[in-house]
Image 1 (cartoon, helix red, strand yellow):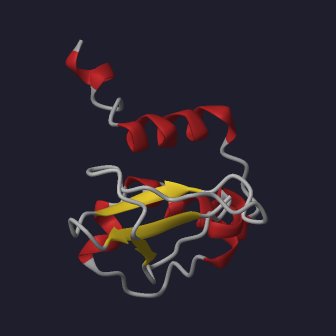
Image 2: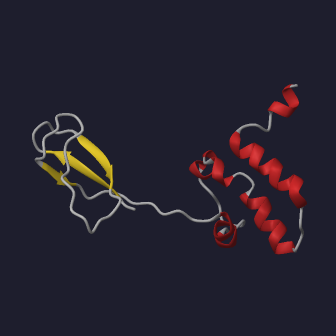
Length: 112
């Protein structure tokens, strides 16, 4: 289900719209002024990648920029990749610890 971006030709507002069925034409109205005089914008896209495929594609030897370490999805990626390469199963506790770190709940255990 794609999300398209539009610009209202009357008021200049830009907005996104989830299209449930692209084969069915829907009347697109501006969310601000309700005008139907809109045009679709060319926008960036993203795709979802499963955790397993991210670990498989991850190269722990490649240098990373600051933005890599600011993304909470990357916490534990290096450790998971290295454990997989070495054939080590770190168990359920490891996965739980990584998930706590990703959600910011890791420090709550130490603050008690």
